[in-house]
Every structure is written in C-alpha cells, then in structure tokens.
Amino acid sequence: MVLEVVKLSVSYDSTQVIKEASFSIAEGVVAVVGPNGAGKTTLLKAISGLVSYAGSLRIMNKDLRALSTEERAKLITYVPPLVDVMPDMSVGDLILSDPLHNKELLKEYIELFELGALLERRLSRVSSGELSRALLAKGLSKNSKIVALDEPLSHIDMRFQLILLKHLRVLSKEGKIILVASNQLNPLLSYVDKV
Image 1 (cartoon, rainbow, N blue to C red):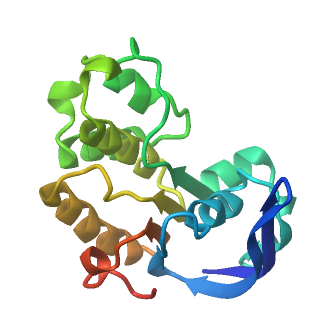
Image 2 (image 1 turned 120 degrees about the vertical axis):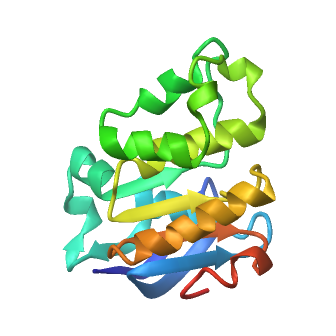
C-alpha cells in the first residue's frame, strides 16, 4: 500500500501553510518532524480529510476525495494530541464514542495503555497524559490502514512513549502506514522507517 501526495497545498485564510508538497509513503512508520507552526498538524489533517486542500491525495491509485466520509473514516484515523472534552464524560465513554472501533482491539488497547482503572473516571479528573493514552486507545482500536498521530509523545511519560513506539513497529509490520508528527526526532529515531 502506498499513499501518494501530489502538489498538496493548504491555506488558512490568506496564509499558505503547505505549498505544493509531493511525496509518497509506503507501509511503515514515518516521522513528520519540524518546529511548531511548520504544518505537521495541517498535513495530517489534510490526509485525514479534516481540512480542505488543493492537489491530490491517493491511496492504492484511488483519489481520497472519491471516498465517502465513512470509507475515509475506516481507512484513516487521526489522533489529536488532546481535545476539548466534556468534563463530565467518563474515560470509558470517550473511548467508546467512536462507532468504528473494534471491540477486541479496544480491550487490548485499554490493557496496553493501562486504562482499566480509569474507565469510570470523569475526564475533568484525569491528567493530560491519561487523556492522551485514552485518545490513543480510541484511535488505534479502529484498526485503520493509515494512522496519523499528532504529537503522540507530547503528553505521555517515557514508559508509555516506549510502549507506544514499540507497538507502532508491530502495526507497521501488519501493512499499515503510521504517520507520527513530532517536533522532536531523537525519541523516534530507533522506531521509524523514514523521516
């Protein structure tokens, strides 16, 4: 499987954030590295269909614009670093809020990210790291072919960073394309196929 990006451009109002970017990504873990404001999040959101763009995004020679919203949601998962949440919602409700999750995989991710004891806890009572782990479990349990992780290491501690990075290597061997946006390359170096 190959994701082709051809002359991708994205602007917000009159500010161009990405200008005619072209590249292809094969299966594996790819680090999207750059400073804050460089367009990493915008790139992931464009690939995920969350922002408008000019140019072409193709997977297996099919234009992503030709996919229905549901088809694209099954194919591509975008996991944000944090989200605005309803403070009275529980961690469990957040994780279960995506109807596309795979129940068996979700159980595995709850265990992997040690979320079992947090499932009944209100989101207003969890740390940013715990919320980030819940978002990772929610997103990864969709079992999508393309996973776009936006700054996934920013809020989790080193132990969970290693757990996540090792797991991404496993997922890449299953034929997935894993995009990891980060402003730090060093933690990723041993785990990515391409920068």
